[in-house]
Image (cartoon, rainbow, N blue to C red):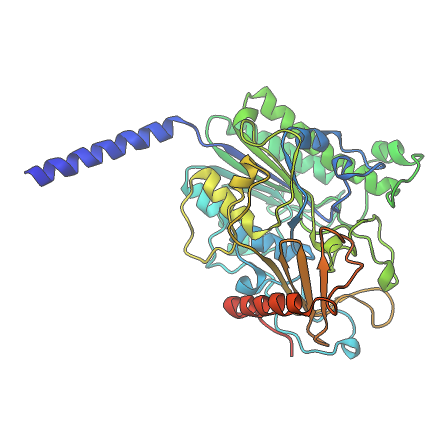
Length: 455
């Protein structure tokens, strides 16, 4: 009798506690992902040519993460964001094949690349849906869109996939739209409508734009805005600037709707890009449409210009307006972060990231882990005969220190990113002990994730 009474009291207290928690509505989450937008391609990140007033305002109201990293190109980033796992665990390393470029120039045999996110991985949308969220995705998915791989089968209540064109685009499933519609505007229309229809319950909106990816196409009125503007700091293409402006308009429209519906105070807005900008290729005989300076390299490279991306968070009452965070963070951290924000259950798969919520609240805080990693066991062609954007390579960043290991030759490069963000001064020969320490940690990590290696 006493034991039964004790059980009933415990259950009652749990119910009361659960009701109290439920009375406070969970925060809405809006995650906007640009495509191929470089680290400096925003006004708030230093550009004097591109115009991004709405994203700049978002940054002024929240925190800019200055040391955030994604993969060297889009598909592996999207797989990491959706699964919370590094590429070695999903097998998703690149777009298409790891056998890029001419075979006679490749010195290693590469492993098989997985282009679709394995079906046994629970996406972040699966977990947020289980926590009571309405979920939607509009835009570029790129980790499998046929049958069970389509986002509508991966935890999203609503999902429209489109990529490849900015005008006369195709959607999956098919959706009609007026002639001349610009894809970024179409996706934003769907996003704003979703917010409006789900204003009375927690929602997770994932808006991965296809802009500013090739083909570089822009609306005529926005091209006219930039065509006579003087270039600055390696930025100067009016079409590209107009595409960035369209993405900025999208952010502005969603911020405005959140304000109109009085949802802004309880909505976390995150803005980022899937990989580095298309530029910084001078050392491999090419030229891009933008510049990532002072960072080295660009999309498709494992130097900072290819993997360091804008990451901006606004969470009213929690993020400190106009602040910056320098703690090294990476794609797999986003999954763990959204789980904590939503109070969502953990998935059955291993999670590689660490929640960034503490950094959202205090940009001077530190994460528990001490290193982040990349692994790319293949090739991405560059410009000119035998030139690569990258050959097989792995990296580790521990604090300010970054080590690159090139698998073809065994060459090791060491940089101090605080003093040398442009990775111009290789310190490997001068600091052999540091090299040995980082190299051992990198090899240990590869073993722990069962990373596929070229031979």
